Length: 115
Image (tube, rainbow, N blue to C red; front, side):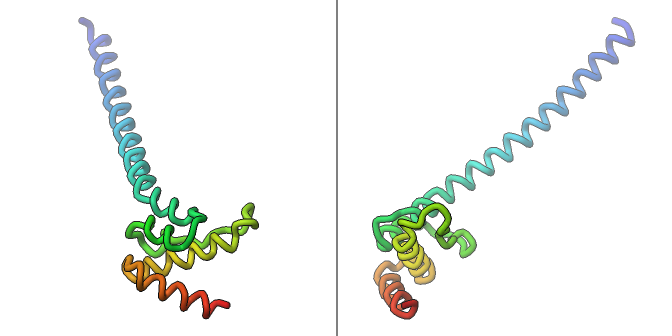
């Protein structure tokens, strides 16, 4: 085997190692994204539930404050009032540590204060 052939093999090996490292990085990023989506799935479901605030509260897992977002009026004017009620209920549940009875009292107090 000539020096040129050995050099080509070594260059190809270095290229494959770089490609492998790049693929591992991409896989790690995809795994992180999957975990993030999985963790936020229940919170998103809770915030999009239109049944009632109590249902939303039960669906809400423990989340960070910044994960709870006020519903957007854009594109959903017919469901705005119900979405807002669910949002208030979800906030109440979050800030009472998931205690549904306390959350319902807080929700009612906030709702009365809001009106």
